[in-house]
Image (cartoon, rainbow, N blue to C red; front, side, top):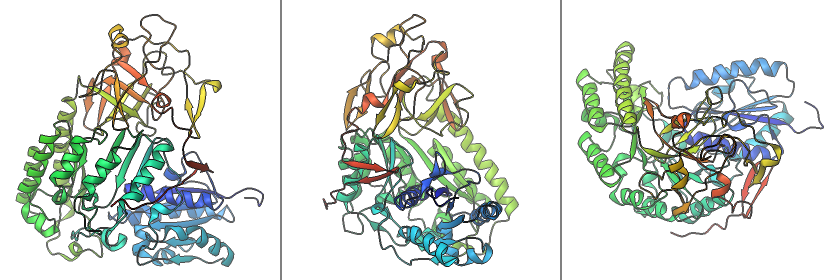
Length: 568
């Protein structure tokens, strides 16, 4: 490290989507203070990043959170010993919980900051460097809503937008309310302004975030606010996909279901945490629904959106869980037939009511039940995937969804319902390279243009404008609350119709294809290998407006000129 170059940073993110979005704010704050990224993806730094400042944004939900943190810190200690001037900061939920205890266990840490004072990080780093002493600052309540902070978006085409922070529920297994505080709602006008800004900057997909999104509006007295918000955001021009996470089953009202079904850009994807299928355990967890009510909500969702992909959370081994209770959970999963599930072995979290409950289930029993649960859900997920075979889909290509995409000549992304799809590329496209003069600047992000590579396609696919999305017109994709015609990229070379990609599809592009296979955790679309349907709709063709937007990108930080106004 030399005085004549800016200090570099990397952020290691542990935990949920809220943490990922907080890490975007952390990165934005550091870049606004003059730091520069140490790598291509500073917000999702993997392994042990080498940078002048390394921030670990922690999670406290599971028992192994502390183990993961101090494992990372042990590795960073060795790096710090050979890098004079390096600083290590720890933030997030575990920092909010353990506070100065982190410094006591790892005295080589320079800064500890909590969930309520992200904006203090640059000043704390400066103070620690100046004073040559560790700085610990934990705020007890939120003073500045995180969305007002500078942001370095991790993706050019997909954006998180927070609508609330904190939670008013009192689930006995959960430590989040004590670390994130009670629910605080942003005003609708602020949210809509941020969505408009990120879409103007190039985003085509937005995910609304909150600990319990469908209780949004409780703070300002409007129980219908979330349904209204979905409909309003769905009208933003240029937005193609709108998602949200996570809702609470007891608060999923009919007006929210109707807004999902009737707003074209809202994805028919729903994460509905079950936690247990036993009424007795749900009561002990202090979940405000029972199994029959949960299934009734699920049935209303599927009646309104038959194509909806519903996922869930399940905890195995909650204190007092009997074999009969666990069987109730297995039975409910059979009835619900979730597309996927996040399954957890219960772990004691100090500070929660459940930690002090009697009849803690022995670990070996928990593991055995967990294995049965995973086997059941894998079968159900596979059956759900097999039911998609032959279905035409629109897949939004994304970076990082397929770890072996390059080796296997494929790209990966998500359908409108959030299902992961690995797509085989047509011959000639897998190894194609974009030439320098084929790259255009779209919203400050380099995007691949057309190259003269070859592929073979179906004559019908070219003549008819490609396969249409499920439930939509042929050759169209959703954009800005409606439908707009896509573009077929013509290829020369090997003959045939020439429909296919001009080079390898890039993140933000859409591929229209057909599902040909399934596994428990992903779908396969390899029709292009045999000349089957494969239609590329480039990002640049769908978003030619990007460029004349009212935002600035300086050092990778998006600073939107938001005209914040209250529309409630």
